[in-house]
Length: 180
Length: 432
Image (cartoon, rainbow over all chains, first blue to last red; front, side, top):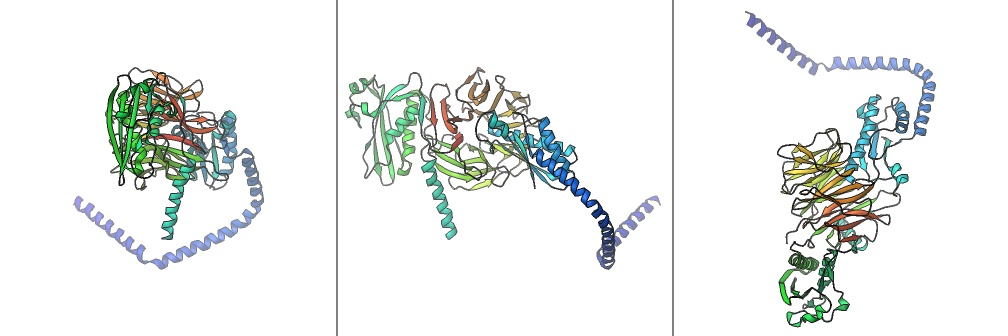
C-alpha cells in the first residue's frame, strides 16, 4: 500500500511537470501581457528616479571628476623592485587612486606586466605575469570583480627605456593599467 | 592570382632583405692556447663556368672559428697543390703547418662533387681521403661537411659545422612596435632566411630533434601562443591558446612530446603536451615560477628554472618518480639550462657579482665554470657536438650573438650589420 502511494505521487508529479512544460510553450499571450506590464512599471519608476538622479547628478559628477583627477595624477603605471612582484608603497598609492575610480564605474581594465632586461626572457615573462597578478589580486581584494580585469605579460619584450643601467631598468619594471 | 603574386613577392622581399641587412659576420676575439696549424689550399675547380663557392675558404673559416685550428694565410703558401703528386712536405714544414688539406671540385649536371685529401706534414703521410656530393645550390653545406670530417679526424669529436642556427633579429621602428624576424642561417651565419616575422614579441625559437620543424612563442594574436612550423613548407600550427602564459616550448628527444609553460591553472608551471593527441599533463604544481624546461638527452627527466627557493635556480624533475631535486647552489641566479648531447654538461645563465654570464655545470664533478666575461649574457645554446656554446650578449649597446668553447678558451662574435640579434638556437645534427 505504501509503495503504491509513493509511485502514484511520482506519477502525479511527472504529469504536472509535463503540463507545466506544455503551458509555458503555448500561452504566449499571457507572457506578452506580463512583459508589457513590467515594462510600464519600469518606465514609471525610471521617470520617478530621474528627477531624484538629476538632483544628485551634479554632486555625483563632481565626485567622479575628483576621483578621475586623483587617478590621473597618480598615473596608471605601477613600478616594481628588481626580480620582485610585490607592490611597493608608491605602487599601492597609485593603485588605490585608480581603484577608487574603478569602484564607481564599470570600466574593464587590462593589466600589462613588464620587466627589465636582466635575467632570462622566459623567466621574465613569468615574472611580468606575477606582477600583473599582484595588481589583479589587490584589485579583487579591493572589490573590483575579477571578470573586469584582464592580464597579460610582455616580460622584457616591450621596454619603455632601451638603455642599460638602473635609470632605464627602473622604468621598465612595471605594470601598466589600460582601460578597455 | 594577383594576391598570390603579392604574397610571393613579399616572401622574396623578406628573404632578400634578410641577406642584405641581417647577415651575421664572424669576428674571432680569442683563440685556443695551442691551436693546430693547418694549411687549407684553395680547391681546384674542374667544372664549367664559375665555381659556385670558394669551398676551401669556407672550410678554413669553420676550422678557424672552432678556435682549435690556426689556418695558414693564403699569402704565405709556397704552392697551391691540388693533387697528392703536387704536395712537397718541406714547403709546409717551413711554414710550421702540422696538417695540409687539398681538394678538387667537379660538377656533373646539377651535382657538385668535392674530393679532399688531408696530410700529416710531420709524418709525411696522407691521413684522410673523402668526398662530398650534392646539388650545386648546397655548395656551402658540402664545404661544411668537409670541415666536419677534418675536424673529427683531428680532434676525435664529430664536427658541427654542417648545422643551422635559428635566431631572432629585431629592428626598432619609430612610432611602431619592434619588427622581429625569426631567421635561419648556416652555422657560420651565411645564407640567412626569414622563417617568420611580426611586429609583436617573438621568442624562444627551438628545434625538433630531427631538425625539420621549429617551435616558438609569438604574440601575433595579441596574446602569447606556441606555434609549430615545418621548415621545408612553412606550414604553421598554433599548438596552444590558453589564458595566461603559453611559452618555453621544448621538444622531447623522441620528438613526440613538447614540454611547455602554461599559467592557465594559476601561475607558471611546466606541462607536457602529447603532440599527436594534444593531451596535456601537468608536471610541476607550485606557487613559485616554474619555467624554461629542458630535456635531459635520455628523455627521463627535465631541468627547469624555479624561484621556489627565493631566487631562480635550476631544478630537475624526474618523470618516473615525479620527484624534484635542486641542481644548482652556486650563485644568486641560475636559469635557462641547456644540456649537452652526452648529458654531462649543463649551460645556463649565471649571475655572479651582479653580472650575468654563461656558465657550464659538469653534472659528474658538480663543478661550475663561468665561460664568458661579458655582461647581460643570455640564451645559451650548445652545439650538437658539445664543443661550442652560442649565446646572446650586449656589445656596443646592441644585442649580438657570440660563441665560446665549452672549455672557455676560444671565443668569437657574430654581430649583425644592423639591429639586434638574440636567442640563438643551434640545430641538432641534420640528415643529409
